[in-house]
Length: 280
Image (cartoon, rainbow, N blue to C red; front, side, top):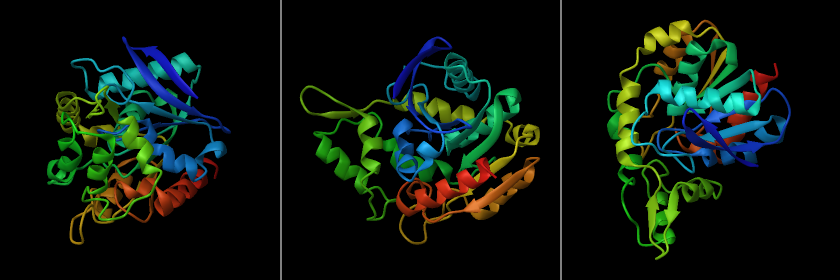
């Protein structure tokens, strides 16, 4: 079920997948949208759990204000969403940027977060993080001649390295607007995503991690984020540092890289780890 909720002065879009308790709210990566989790849903995360997957401000079908892309604004949006849906306490999770937002919210809104599921995110960053995510950022603001050409370009992104899973397509379709003349343009503005990244990097992450008291699962996919020899987005050592920095953390490794972990075999293993953590 699609939902649109007024919160914090904007309209936020989310997908509400039916299932059991406790409810799990998932937040996507820096340039991604709610359909980034379709592979986890297909792998059985729903109906095992009720899963709410949200388009953060500036992404997907949510409103796109000119500014206000710091962690505090994102967090206030999501708290308003929980209020509107009558959810006092949830398992809170996210992938990449969304995982960091989950950590931020656990520290600042502890009464709303029962457990944490962090998918390939950590409180320290690879020194080449901007270079590693550049292929994803470069598509923003560009107009492509057709949907087929856009999808073909996405399939050539280095982190797929010739691998593809059909479930991925829904995330890219939700990522763009197909205009009347057939041309395709991503919905997110590069200026907004740039602000979100800059403000993310400016946060006091050691202090945030020290304030996290909830049980946390960190799912790490240390595969190469591109051709052989490319470093992973989150090396295992950094994942373990983040687990050690919170009060009650554990780490599970799954196959694939930062993107492919959400689909196919990576998704199946990720779902297994989440369900074992949420329902011990």
